Image (tube, rainbow, N blue to C red; front, side):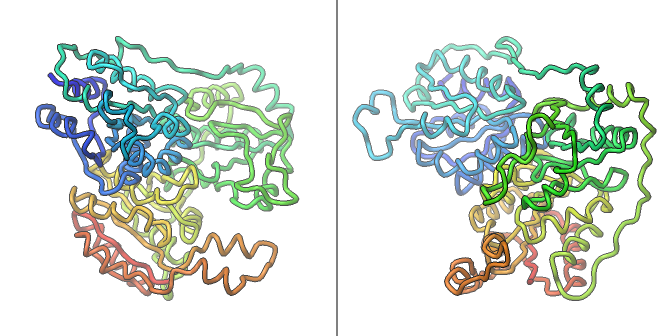
Length: 515
């Protein structure tokens, strides 16, 4: 086999079944290798940030790494923004970056770059393959590395001459390499002592896999602890994954701005971190310390990415916490009248199918939907963990690849979606069941909100710099040009009708929501 065939065979043997690819000349032998290694699904993205964001969505939903195939340093650089988000989400990803042939690198050709330096900030592990004989071991080790630290990216740099060279290397399974997992210490007696000695307790829940504080079991255990301790609980502001909807507690998210967040945190004499980091302000705001809770008021129950359910349930047992009382189910009715963020959130909550996945990006409709989504049918929410915009649409795509039997919705804003608009082509090419909702207010609303903080006026030039109205983007025609069915809703009634139609139809659809 060639080195490229060995790479794909070893990735497959270690559980990597999907590759999101935007290859170039230095990856052509990997492209050829897909012919003989046909069990691995290859999904083409028209831009690298589509590929890395899709790998993030896939990993969040499966807990397993997908691969990306990217072209040299500049191609990898195009995908860094969503790898930044994936790092914050602790998503396992194997990045394969083709490089020049090893003997060509000294000549500093136009596409030569320092790939290692580009990769390190967004990768937990970076390695350059040094020979064709090393490919099998390196591929297996890359998958093992994605399981470190609760999940992380592993980047393999693959020179083109080692891709084409023949080798007799064998396939190595993951258990031959070993999986190393770091874990925090947990002393139940110490935790119980601090809980019992505290008067006002806030649990701060981080999101992730099926054993996180924002899993269904995790939230139910936290609700029982809150009842036993007269405590409150909040999700972190932007969780990687959270289960929501009927039958689950209606935990709010920690507010984005420091003033309302401090109103939640300041009265607490103990803030219990369940897979969440110590809370900090999103930006540096004058008059507000960056860290919102002092160390002496913090108690770490589990680290981010670490399984929390077992520890939560052990505390439930130790405290003999009351049984969980399932909230009464009251599915909201669709809104009526003009489209507002609140009307959009209510209408989506009313029509969302059972077991859907909602990828949320954008301040316009994200929180209004979250505020009512506890009353919706059971679903999974994925949010922008790292703040690099252009995540929502690719993450929805990756979730749809991971969970083809589940309806996926992208609840997005018009400005951020333009960063990875090429994802629409991949949705159509793969015929994925993704309904894309675009809040079209033709502005960068989050920037305007920041500019208006403290009742500051929005100046004429600032307004112009945050406007997307000249010209206005025609989202319906844009979607149709990529092969995605498009429609426009100008009222809540029209949105409900178009949502029902989109959910009933196989394949992707886009609805422009005129605000």
